[in-house]
Image (cartoon, rainbow, N blue to C red):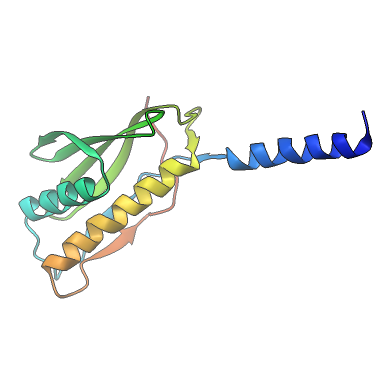
Length: 147
C-alpha cells in the first residue's frame, strides 16, 4: 500500500472519529430571578411553546413535569423530562436511541439540541416579562445519571 493511500486512510479515520465524539450528559438547571413573578402555569406554557418551536413532541404534561421526545431523520431519538415550578426548571435526559449513549456520555448533538431548547424556554419567559428573567445555576456541569 502506498504511503499516500495509507495517509489518506488515517486522515479519514481521524475525521470520522472527530465527527462522532460523545460528551458527558448535561442537565441544565435554571432558576428564575426573585423579581420575576412567573406562575407555575407560565413556566409550563413557556416550556411547551419552546418544545413546539423546536419540533419536539410533548408526550405528557403533569403538574410539575413535561415529558417530550424528538426524532431526527428517523434515525436519532431522544426523550427528556423537564421538571418545573414557579421558581425554575431542569431539563433531564431520560432515554435515547441512535445517539451512542454509554456510561453517561452521548453524541454532542444531544447537547446542542438541549442547549437550544433551554435558550428558547428562557426567551419565552423573557417575552412575558420586561426584566431579565433567569440566571443559570450549574449550567454546563455534567450531572450523574441514575439509570
